[in-house]
Length: 78
Image 1 (cartoon, rainbow, N blue to C red):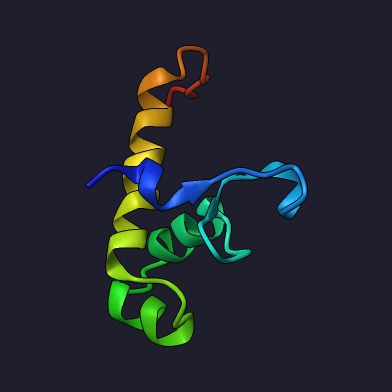
Image 2: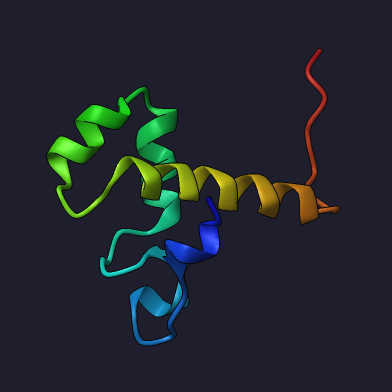
C-alpha cells in the first residue's frame, strides 16, 4: 500500500493540510484519534468515508514524515 493513493493536500481544502482523499478529515485528526486510543473499527464506524486502508495510509504518511524530520526537538526527561 502506498500512502500517496489515500492522502492528498490541496490549498483549497483544510488550508492545504494533508487529508484523506475524498474527505475533509486531516491526517493529524486521524492520528490524534488513534493516539487517544480510538480503535480502527470505531474510527471507521464514526467516519464511514474512512477505511482501514486509509487509516494505515495516515500512519504510513506520519512515519515517513517523522523519518524526514531532522530538527524535531525532544526534551530530555529527568
